[in-house]
Length: 134
Image (cartoon, rainbow, N blue to C red; front, side):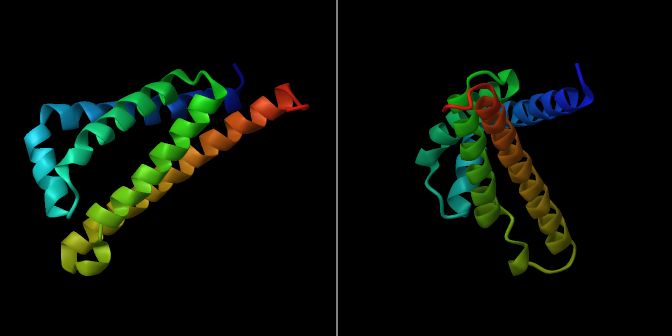
């Protein structure tokens, strides 16, 4: 395996595991997660969808098969990650150490979203290279 392929595969596995673990964590702390969501003015009724996205999207990312499902999962997880920033990492409303922490988490999520979009772009490019008529 070449270094570029190894680096992309490693990134996919780590990112997939990140979302799978996040989904499992939400399942095992369901009530606390609903409370957290409601404190951010989100309905707890969204939680099953969030869990399904994190578990399903994370698994698809981890496995890396299927062009359309992979690209759609990467894009959905990227949008979800950016939305998480808007609701849970509002550093601009804080001061002191909490502002620094939330700013760090905000930018961590930007990096994750950028990686997901990159994975989607690489998969789309690979599909185009293998089938130029498409």
